[in-house]
Structure formats: C-alpha cells, structure tokens
Length: 274
Image 1 (cartoon, rainbow, N blue to C red):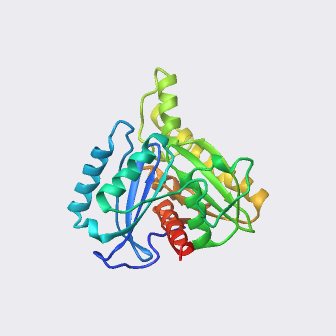
Image 2: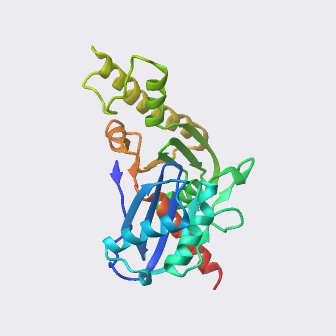
Image 3: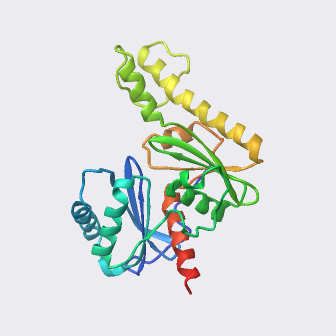
C-alpha cells in the first residue's frame, strides 16, 4: 500500500487555494499552491463556535505558520454540518476577502451522481470521488475513516453509483463500553494474538481485527458489483494507520484526498467561467 500526500512540491508563500472540509468531528483546512498542499491544519468541529471564533482560530493557525491573507487567491468549502455552512462562508469572506465556492447542488463537479437522490451525497464524498478518479482512474472505491466508515463507489464509466456506511471504529468501541458495564475503554491497537487470554486483549481483537474483517469484506463485495476497483483510503481518524497496517486490501492511503477533491472542483468551476 502506498501513502500519497501531494501531487508535487509547491512553493511556500505563493498564492493558492484554501480548501475547507467541515465534517461532523473534525474540520480540515489546506492551502494549495498549484497541485501541492503547502500547509494544512485540523481542529474539532463545534457547532457552538461563532463565525468570529472560527475566524480567530484560523487567523492564529495561519499566523503561526507564516501564511498571510494575501497568500489566498480562492476559497472552496465542503460542509456536511448545515449549521456551519454559512459561518464558514462568512469566515472566508472576512479573512481572505474572497467569495468561497460552496460545494453542493448546482455546482459542476465533473462527477456524475447516479443514485436515487443525488442530494443525499455529501460534499465530502463527492470531493473524495473527484480526487480518487483524478488520481487513480475508474472503477475506484474510496474508504473514508471518520465518525463513520464510508465506502463510496465510482463505476468504470465514471459515475458515483452508491455507498456503504458503517460505524467508525471509535464509535463502535464507545458504544460497546457504554452498553457493557464491566468493559472499559481500551487502546485501539491489535493485540499479539486473535484468541486472547484476557479481557482487554479480547476486546482489542474483536474490535480491531473485527474491523479489518469488516473493511475487507465490504471491499470484496463492492468489487463483485462494480468490477476490479482500486481501494483508496483517506481520513484523519487516529486508528487509520493501525488498521491499514493489518490489511493488504487497500491500494493507497491519501490523507488529504477530500481537500484535494475540493481544490479540483474549485479549479473546474473557475475554468467554466472563462
């Protein structure tokens, strides 16, 4: 399995695109120069924060890494938390003096959505599909590890044809701890043996190896339906590295895949206006 970051090296300090991905748990932001991410940041998504608070937070992160507002020539936002969409757009206007592109219905992304209700497909999953197709061709599967595990399928003819959604590993572990009084929280790492001789390692075996089995089984079943697709992983969940270490079913890991997809959508949108 390959771990892929940017497409190339970009000069720090040159103007570029800021891409913002607001998910249920984490918000990730990257400054792109050409095809390369030159800076990226992440922080907790919090619906209680105001636009002012998000502006201060981003300003401090940019200042810490020597990025000036003038380094930003365009903004694109993908948000799956409706309460924060307007706030993030306001932050982009105030901080960078740019009108952001909000990825959603009506935006030409270059990805055909062939599902029962295309409006159900979130901006992050569209961005993942756009970036995966750009990098790896079709057919392709994108596994995004976060609050949930989403497996998005792009067919051989370049259409988004559907998804699989399962609980994230950390969510599954927290649910088990809540429902079983004698089972506490554990580190989500693989134990030395699958058949364990103590409760902590038995839980680790069931959760970690069980999740790898879930992941591999979903990939196998999806490939049976859409063809011999490459499986691409993304996501910032802390357990991703541990899971990918235990499987050969993933062809590449691209941590910033969603942000890259947002950048590609913004570039396509700008080109369409010329």
